[in-house]
Length: 137
Ligand code: DQA
Image 1 (cartoon, rainbow, N blue to C red):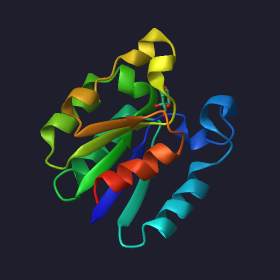
Image 2 (image 1 turned 30 degrees about the vertical axis):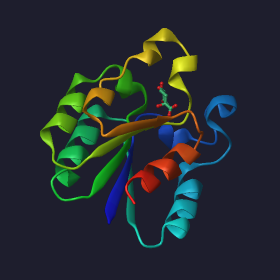
Image 3 (image 1 turned 90 degrees about the horizontal axis):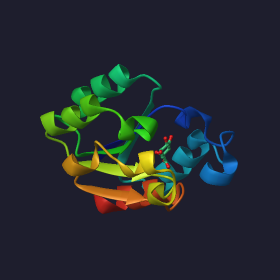
Image 4 (image 1 turned 120 degrees about the horizontal axis):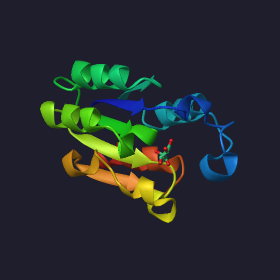
C-alpha cells in the first residue's frame, strides 16, 4: 500500500501557526509518529505553498499510488485547478482538514475538492490524517 500525504500552503508552519486552531506539533514530528504506527504502509509526505507544485505532485503520483491524502489548506476553498487535477487522475483522494471548517468563516465552507474526493475527514486535529490512512486499509 503506497500512500502520500500532500499538504498545501502554510501547513509547513504547523506547531507555530495559530496553535489554538492547529495545535502545537510540527507536521514533521507527527509524520514520524504516523510512519511508526503504520509500518506496513509506504507513507510519503509532500508540502508546498505553491498551487502549481501541488497540481504537479497530484499528477505525478495520481496514476500509480494507491491513494492521496490531501489537505489543500486555503486552496481547498479557491482552487478549481486542484479540483480538476483530482478529477483527472486514477488514485482515490481523501480530503483532510485539521480544523472543523464548518465551524469557521463562511468562505471555509466551500471546497473544490470534496465533490471529487472519495471521502472527507475534518475536525479531528492531526488525528484526521491518521483516520485518513485507516480509511485506505
Ligand atoms: C485547513 C483549513 C483551511 O480553511 C485553512 O486555510 C488551512 C488549514 C485545516 O486543515 O483545517 O490552512 O485546511
